Length: 209
Ligand SMILES: C[S@@+](CC[C@H](N)C(=O)[O-])C[C@H]1O[C@@H](n2cnc3c(N)ncnc32)[C@H](O)[C@@H]1O
Image 1 (cartoon, rainbow, N blue to C red):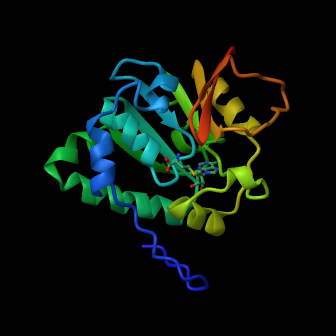
Image 2 (image 1 turned 90 degrees about the vertical axis):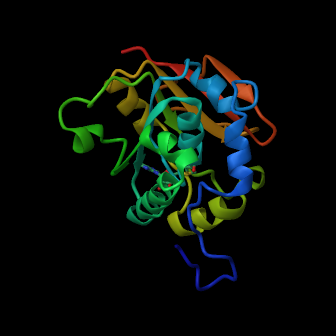
Protein backbone atom coordinates (compact mmCIF):
# COMPACT_ATOMS: atom_id res chain seq x y z
CA UNK A 1 0.00 0.00 0.00
CA UNK A 2 1.36 3.44 -0.95
CA UNK A 3 0.26 6.36 1.25
CA UNK A 4 0.72 10.04 0.46
CA UNK A 5 0.99 11.70 3.87
CA UNK A 6 0.94 15.21 2.44
CA UNK A 7 -2.32 14.96 0.52
CA UNK A 8 -5.62 13.62 1.67
CA UNK A 9 -5.87 10.84 -0.86
CA UNK A 10 -6.76 7.21 -0.29
CA UNK A 11 -3.77 4.87 -0.10
CA UNK A 12 -2.78 3.22 -3.36
CA UNK A 13 -3.13 -0.53 -3.47
CA UNK A 14 -3.03 -2.59 -6.65
CA UNK A 15 -6.22 -4.63 -6.79
CA UNK A 16 -7.26 -6.66 -9.83
CA UNK A 17 -10.26 -8.12 -8.02
CA UNK A 18 -12.54 -5.06 -7.92
CA UNK A 19 -16.05 -5.54 -9.32
CA UNK A 20 -15.66 -2.98 -12.12
CA UNK A 21 -12.36 -4.40 -13.34
CA UNK A 22 -13.68 -7.99 -13.23
CA UNK A 23 -16.67 -6.92 -15.34
CA UNK A 24 -14.30 -5.35 -17.84
CA UNK A 25 -12.23 -8.54 -18.04
CA UNK A 26 -15.31 -10.63 -18.82
CA UNK A 27 -16.03 -8.92 -22.12
CA UNK A 28 -12.65 -8.28 -23.67
CA UNK A 29 -12.70 -8.17 -27.46
CA UNK A 30 -10.75 -6.17 -30.03
CA UNK A 31 -13.89 -4.01 -30.30
CA UNK A 32 -14.22 -3.33 -26.57
CA UNK A 33 -10.49 -2.76 -25.92
CA UNK A 34 -8.46 -0.56 -28.24
CA UNK A 35 -5.30 -2.09 -26.78
CA UNK A 36 -6.24 -5.56 -28.07
CA UNK A 37 -6.74 -4.02 -31.50
CA UNK A 38 -3.40 -2.20 -31.25
CA UNK A 39 -1.56 -5.43 -30.40
CA UNK A 40 -3.41 -7.12 -33.28
CA UNK A 41 -2.61 -10.73 -32.37
CA UNK A 42 -4.75 -13.76 -31.73
CA UNK A 43 -4.70 -14.91 -28.08
CA UNK A 44 -1.30 -16.44 -27.34
CA UNK A 45 0.78 -13.47 -28.52
CA UNK A 46 3.87 -12.43 -26.57
CA UNK A 47 3.97 -8.85 -25.38
CA UNK A 48 6.78 -6.94 -23.69
CA UNK A 49 5.24 -4.26 -21.45
CA UNK A 50 8.12 -1.80 -21.12
CA UNK A 51 6.33 0.47 -18.61
CA UNK A 52 4.29 -1.81 -16.37
CA UNK A 53 2.96 0.83 -13.94
CA UNK A 54 -0.02 -0.63 -12.09
CA UNK A 55 -0.18 -3.48 -14.57
CA UNK A 56 -3.72 -2.78 -15.73
CA UNK A 57 -3.01 -2.86 -19.46
CA UNK A 58 -0.91 -6.00 -19.03
CA UNK A 59 -3.70 -7.65 -17.05
CA UNK A 60 -6.20 -6.87 -19.83
CA UNK A 61 -3.86 -8.41 -22.41
CA UNK A 62 -3.37 -11.51 -20.27
CA UNK A 63 -7.13 -11.83 -19.74
CA UNK A 64 -7.50 -11.91 -23.53
CA UNK A 65 -4.97 -14.74 -23.67
CA UNK A 66 -1.64 -13.04 -24.39
CA UNK A 67 1.52 -13.72 -22.42
CA UNK A 68 3.06 -10.55 -21.03
CA UNK A 69 6.43 -9.76 -19.51
CA UNK A 70 5.97 -6.55 -17.53
CA UNK A 71 9.01 -4.43 -16.72
CA UNK A 72 8.78 -1.80 -13.99
CA UNK A 73 11.63 0.50 -12.99
CA UNK A 74 10.30 1.74 -9.65
CA UNK A 75 10.92 -0.72 -6.83
CA UNK A 76 7.89 0.59 -4.93
CA UNK A 77 5.52 0.19 -7.88
CA UNK A 78 7.05 -3.23 -8.66
CA UNK A 79 6.28 -4.36 -5.08
CA UNK A 80 2.73 -2.96 -5.25
CA UNK A 81 2.07 -4.89 -8.47
CA UNK A 82 3.71 -8.04 -7.12
CA UNK A 83 1.39 -7.89 -4.13
CA UNK A 84 -1.64 -7.30 -6.39
CA UNK A 85 -0.72 -10.28 -8.58
CA UNK A 86 -0.25 -12.52 -5.54
CA UNK A 87 -3.71 -11.65 -4.25
CA UNK A 88 -5.28 -12.04 -7.71
CA UNK A 89 -3.73 -15.51 -8.06
CA UNK A 90 -5.62 -16.58 -4.95
CA UNK A 91 -8.90 -16.16 -6.86
CA UNK A 92 -9.68 -19.19 -8.98
CA UNK A 93 -11.19 -17.05 -11.77
CA UNK A 94 -7.97 -15.02 -12.10
CA UNK A 95 -5.34 -17.69 -11.52
CA UNK A 96 -4.87 -18.58 -15.20
CA UNK A 97 -4.61 -14.89 -16.12
CA UNK A 98 -1.88 -14.26 -13.54
CA UNK A 99 -0.04 -17.35 -14.84
CA UNK A 100 0.37 -15.56 -18.18
CA UNK A 101 2.04 -12.54 -16.53
CA UNK A 102 5.67 -12.18 -15.54
CA UNK A 103 6.83 -9.15 -13.58
CA UNK A 104 10.44 -7.97 -13.78
CA UNK A 105 12.02 -5.15 -11.82
CA UNK A 106 14.39 -2.98 -13.87
CA UNK A 107 14.88 -0.49 -16.67
CA UNK A 108 13.31 -1.69 -19.92
CA UNK A 109 15.46 0.65 -22.00
CA UNK A 110 18.44 -1.50 -21.00
CA UNK A 111 17.04 -4.94 -21.75
CA UNK A 112 20.48 -6.56 -21.60
CA UNK A 113 20.69 -5.65 -17.90
CA UNK A 114 17.47 -7.60 -17.31
CA UNK A 115 17.82 -10.57 -19.58
CA UNK A 116 21.54 -10.80 -20.37
CA UNK A 117 22.73 -11.04 -23.95
CA UNK A 118 19.48 -12.34 -25.45
CA UNK A 119 15.80 -12.01 -24.59
CA UNK A 120 14.34 -15.11 -22.93
CA UNK A 121 11.81 -15.34 -25.75
CA UNK A 122 10.79 -13.61 -28.94
CA UNK A 123 8.21 -10.92 -28.41
CA UNK A 124 5.57 -10.02 -30.99
CA UNK A 125 4.84 -6.57 -29.61
CA UNK A 126 6.42 -3.98 -27.30
CA UNK A 127 4.02 -1.76 -25.36
CA UNK A 128 5.04 1.69 -24.07
CA UNK A 129 2.93 3.87 -21.79
CA UNK A 130 5.19 6.45 -20.18
CA UNK A 131 3.93 9.05 -17.71
CA UNK A 132 2.01 11.84 -19.41
CA UNK A 133 3.37 15.33 -18.99
CA UNK A 134 1.28 17.13 -16.32
CA UNK A 135 2.00 20.53 -17.81
CA UNK A 136 -0.51 19.72 -20.51
CA UNK A 137 -4.00 20.02 -19.13
CA UNK A 138 -5.46 17.41 -21.49
CA UNK A 139 -2.91 14.90 -20.26
CA UNK A 140 -3.84 14.91 -16.59
CA UNK A 141 -4.25 11.37 -15.37
CA UNK A 142 -6.95 10.44 -12.89
CA UNK A 143 -7.14 8.62 -9.58
CA UNK A 144 -4.42 6.11 -8.87
CA UNK A 145 -2.41 7.19 -11.89
CA UNK A 146 -2.38 10.78 -10.61
CA UNK A 147 -1.00 9.65 -7.28
CA UNK A 148 1.58 7.52 -9.01
CA UNK A 149 2.61 10.49 -11.11
CA UNK A 150 3.05 12.66 -8.03
CA UNK A 151 5.32 9.98 -6.66
CA UNK A 152 7.29 9.07 -9.79
CA UNK A 153 7.30 12.32 -11.74
CA UNK A 154 6.34 12.65 -15.38
CA UNK A 155 7.74 13.04 -18.83
CA UNK A 156 9.90 10.49 -20.55
CA UNK A 157 11.96 10.40 -23.69
CA UNK A 158 10.33 7.76 -25.86
CA UNK A 159 13.31 7.14 -28.10
CA UNK A 160 15.28 4.86 -25.72
CA UNK A 161 12.23 2.55 -25.44
CA UNK A 162 11.95 2.42 -29.22
CA UNK A 163 15.63 1.71 -29.68
CA UNK A 164 15.60 -1.06 -27.07
CA UNK A 165 12.56 -2.76 -28.65
CA UNK A 166 14.00 -2.52 -32.16
CA UNK A 167 17.45 -3.75 -31.07
CA UNK A 168 15.76 -6.71 -29.40
CA UNK A 169 14.06 -7.57 -32.70
CA UNK A 170 10.49 -6.84 -31.60
CA UNK A 171 8.63 -6.18 -34.87
CA UNK A 172 5.81 -3.98 -33.56
CA UNK A 173 5.67 -1.22 -30.95
CA UNK A 174 2.47 0.32 -29.60
CA UNK A 175 2.50 3.60 -27.68
CA UNK A 176 -0.28 4.95 -25.46
CA UNK A 177 -0.70 8.72 -25.47
CA UNK A 178 -3.33 11.26 -24.45
CA UNK A 179 -5.76 11.62 -27.34
CA UNK A 180 -4.48 14.96 -28.62
CA UNK A 181 -0.85 14.70 -27.58
CA UNK A 182 1.90 15.58 -30.02
CA UNK A 183 5.42 14.27 -29.78
CA UNK A 184 8.33 13.77 -32.03
CA UNK A 185 10.84 10.99 -31.89
CA UNK A 186 14.40 12.16 -32.25
CA UNK A 187 15.09 9.59 -34.99
CA UNK A 188 11.98 10.64 -36.89
CA UNK A 189 9.94 7.43 -36.64
CA UNK A 190 6.27 7.95 -37.32
CA UNK A 191 3.31 5.75 -36.42
CA UNK A 192 1.99 3.67 -39.28
CA UNK A 193 -1.49 4.25 -37.91
CA UNK A 194 -3.35 5.43 -34.81
CA UNK A 195 -6.35 4.11 -32.91
CA UNK A 196 -8.35 6.87 -31.26
CA UNK A 197 -10.18 6.37 -27.97
CA UNK A 198 -12.17 8.88 -25.94
CA UNK A 199 -9.31 9.99 -23.66
CA UNK A 200 -6.26 8.34 -25.15
CA UNK A 201 -5.00 6.83 -28.37
CA UNK A 202 -2.62 4.07 -29.43
CA UNK A 203 0.11 4.80 -31.97
CA UNK A 204 1.34 1.76 -33.87
CA UNK A 205 4.88 1.53 -35.20
CA UNK A 206 6.56 -1.20 -37.26
CA UNK A 207 10.20 -1.70 -36.37
CA UNK A 208 12.79 -2.21 -39.08
CA UNK A 209 16.16 -3.41 -37.91
C1 LIG B 1 1.81 5.51 -16.93
S1 LIG B 1 2.56 4.22 -16.01
C2 LIG B 1 2.06 2.78 -16.94
C3 LIG B 1 0.65 2.38 -16.65
C4 LIG B 1 0.32 1.01 -17.17
N1 LIG B 1 0.19 1.00 -18.60
C5 LIG B 1 -0.94 0.46 -16.52
O1 LIG B 1 -1.82 -0.01 -17.23
O2 LIG B 1 -1.02 0.47 -15.29
C6 LIG B 1 4.27 4.33 -16.43
C7 LIG B 1 5.18 3.42 -15.63
O3 LIG B 1 6.39 3.22 -16.36
C8 LIG B 1 7.45 3.10 -15.46
N2 LIG B 1 8.69 3.36 -16.20
C9 LIG B 1 9.13 4.55 -16.68
N3 LIG B 1 10.31 4.39 -17.31
C10 LIG B 1 10.62 3.06 -17.23
C11 LIG B 1 11.71 2.27 -17.69
N4 LIG B 1 12.74 2.83 -18.36
N5 LIG B 1 11.71 0.95 -17.45
C12 LIG B 1 10.67 0.38 -16.78
N6 LIG B 1 9.61 1.07 -16.31
C13 LIG B 1 9.58 2.40 -16.52
C14 LIG B 1 7.12 4.12 -14.39
O4 LIG B 1 7.82 3.84 -13.18
C15 LIG B 1 5.60 3.97 -14.27
O5 LIG B 1 5.28 3.05 -13.26
